[in-house]
Image (spheres, rainbow, N blue to C red):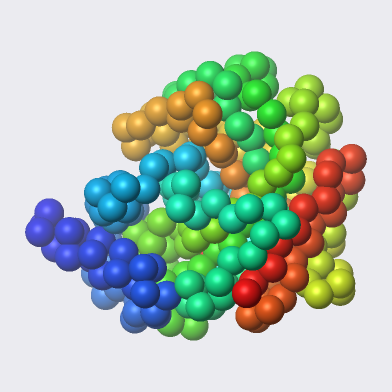
Length: 253
Ligand code: OOG
Ligand code: MG
């Protein structure tokens, strides 16, 4: 079995490296087995010199669940190699079929793991920021089962974050407008993220304990898309405006 998971991790990792789609897995993996594949694929990134920079939550909003037909909250791991500079550009050819989504990110000043309260979460955060996540499924046609997407690191692929805001500001219901080439494509609120994005950080800490790792000081936690994700073409400029927070943008080259 372990041998087989290593094989699946290699398939997914190579597809991510090449920006090339693969068929959905035909394996009937359990959720725990899928997270095992995810961890093995992450180990390959680490072997290549990438450093884990945190965690991304998935399916924390109704809009995302409806768009992808999955109702279970999931996570993936992000690395330094996935960071895209705010105002910068990311090569479209690096991805299979990238989509962007509006998120809120937390940067931890202290480690977090296990059953924590909203207040524990707030006390551990150094800064918060608006974030654009670039998701990219390694599966053909962006179609997957729950186990497939978890094995594929929950489509983690890129993220844009910057600049930071104080963690004591109220982020429970901030308007968010995601635009592509100057046209508003998705309009929503941070309240769509589990009713309040802080709940996503609480859930992330529980995942960390459940799957045997710790969210460390310095790690970034992405709370999950507040709206459906938007497919983007090469050359597109993506902008996120979040009420009360700074505007962020980047382009696909
Ligand atoms: C899976 C990742 C979900 C989110 O914010 O909900 C996600 C996908 O939709 O491909 O990143
Ligand atoms: Mg996301």
